[in-house]
Length: 488
Figure 1 (cartoon, rainbow, N blue to C red):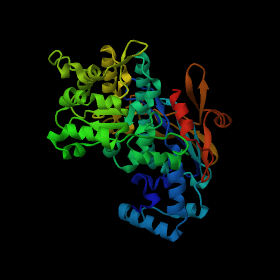
Figure 2: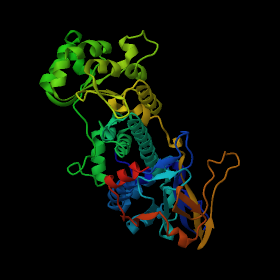
Figure 3: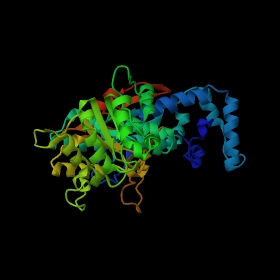
Figure 4: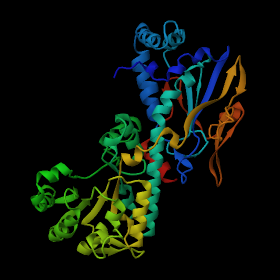
């Protein structure tokens, strides 16, 4: 889609340049999560800025604005605005001046990506570096907000899953080295467009290594200095879908299982969707029939139920008839067939030749309920892999953590002004910080923020310049970000 980069803003912003006071020379703003609609979360993982800078501020602006003829880009912008606001609604000399300059006169100072930032603490600040381009700072607000809320939100979601799965692996004596594989990204098909899938999929890979979103690996190589040749960025295993199972017909389902296990994938891990017709028949008839072959394989057969209540399917339905497969649950039935070992905490761990993955409508609460029920029934939480899909990653908005860009400082005729908003009709969420900002590490507390600091104080602290006058000055790698995330 060939869209002028200057069209990527809210319509009401195109003439804010003339609305600021005469003599305005500086606009200084920040990106901050202001609240949490998830009661258990009060720190948000910062992720996505490096992509935004590389892709939009450098690649897109250079390719679609600065590298094009000025007359061409101005004519295209003028055509759109005059059809949108009417003839002579705005003037265009400020856009012409920016094209003549040849770069974006901005400075962005940020905390390192992967940092867990408390609510109401800025993740980065942005300001213009040339007085005549004061309007540019908040002109970019819409695009920044549109792109960055999702990777921060999904990174936070993934990290909460990782912490939950770590906790239960420790409680039930499971293998902690398996936990990075225990959360698997199934969200690609349900996300709101390709860019959303890439951003969310990459954010997932900060906490896990399992993914079905292949282009998220490319994304991390392109924008976060990852290399799948040198490190594990993301991976998966061969897996079936319902069309595969259906094509073998219901009366040939056992033969389909046998063919997949013995001929198509005689070794390694293979995941087989198992509820195409009768899941409990698969669990109580087919698996016992194939027990010898499964135990003899050099690898693991992973069973995937894909419908029903996941908590009851996996752990057992207490309302089902006693001793029925439904009452025992999938893990319980598989234990009866294949057995296994007992962890240091006394919890059962399935034989390594068999496993289970569930990826239909797995929310954080359901994941926790499954882990808790498994623990109560004497099983280690690491007996299962969770497919985390768009049901979880897509059920969020910018307001989940109240992300916003707000100006807190400006200069008019060389005089500094501390600016803020504090609506009396609001509950305090929209009250902004004031003046210049500084982040610091407070012992025993973590990252904190002070506002109304001096210009010298603003130059110190945790915020570092990452973008200045069209150039990326500081980069971080996937490995560095992962290390920060996993320390949270």
